Image 1 (cartoon, helix red, strand yellow):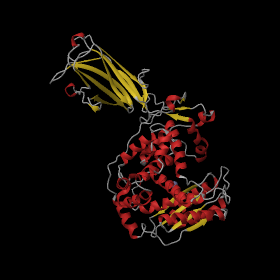
Image 2 (cartoon, rainbow, N blue to C red; image 1 turned 90 degrees about the horizontal axis):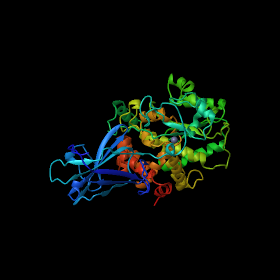
Image 3 (cartoon, rainbow, N blue to C red; image 1 turned 60 degrees about the vertical axis):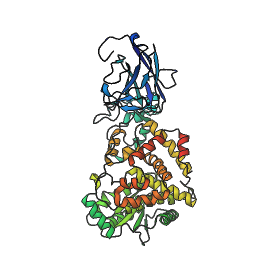
Image 4 (cartoon, rainbow, N blue to C red; image 1 turned 90 degrees about the vertical axis):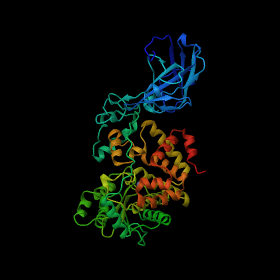
Length: 552
Ligand SMILES: [Zn+2]
């Protein structure tokens, strides 16, 4: 077809391959080295003439169409679909009967693509008369993952009811793997999951037998805003009260009577080592809940009395953290805890409540000499949260936190875990203290996670809104992995700068600038650039990632 409508005797054929032309294909993944080739048979009247070849690509990503054209430097440039501005890809002094061109060779980003190849006789100026193939060559590039390679029992549920979470016309975004139990298939519910703790505990693990199609992410705004008035007022007040200056007051431990004293000693050792590294921040009260209800009650009482005033004390005991602490003592296995910054009090305090050591039967799994340093290491992690809280003086944004101020959960958590490992390594602890080993484990975990939930990254957890959006898609899918995923990111930042930058410089900058600006100041790159660098690291083969995360 010629752009001036005159009939032509030319034909054009296009091929795409990911094995250097062995076999032609129309479906690729982002890891593939894609080779695009074309054969142009010019009209007999044009053979021997001076000519030009053109290549145009129409890419559709999540419903949006973008045109790009290949220029003579081999680069795809954005094109406004006007023939006047169409760059030529190849200049040919004398057109042969067949012109074979290698259009492109390399990886491509995700999207549905249509490729148009054309030629024209060379014109010095003005619009060239372009001859192109009648129908474009169609191919698509997607994220890799198990959704593409495994035979799944697709779940007949429309995940795209409220918005587009995956690129499927019926909203079928996930499937059961062949390891899924019938119990899971019958009882696991989609949409917003039941709030009932025991139900959640029972079916939570079913998510491990589900594989998802690529997630359609939504990037949060990165236009940093100023703090709200209430935040500024809090900053002034907290600084006047010494919230952000080290404290001389010794930390106080309040423990339930069923907690073994040796365990408390380990916790104290961990806290004291963390204090040596980070300084003493307080007043701090540490509340240790055991595995029985009765002995937990006086601990809960003290917690609520010291962290609240007036009517809020009863609310704390009966409904809020009091309930959490009772559940810690009676339901939850493993070790749990939460940090509480009671910055609104006349004399602000930090508290930390934990249930350090219980097995799946809710019995103490701690005994002297078994897993030494574990409890201390965990408390060092938690103390890091207390430390973080002390640099957070612009408080009170809550739901409407201005862009750039609320520290993302992945950053908060993985920095604490990173601290735990660095401290353990420095002190020769036996628990979570071998950085290279830890990196090896998280790289594998995150690799598997990306295979099951392609397109989901820590960027999706940057804001509360983003977290809720992801939650409404795949529920607790990110729960286990957010710390691991973030930990790779923190390690990358530490290797780029230093551990001290991660533990000290960043917080000094964040106190006055909020997290996003402080991130740029401390690490020398924007949050956007960071996510891109992390993504390209995570696309590498596992051994290369592990190598890149070792200290040189
Ligand atoms: Zn934590």
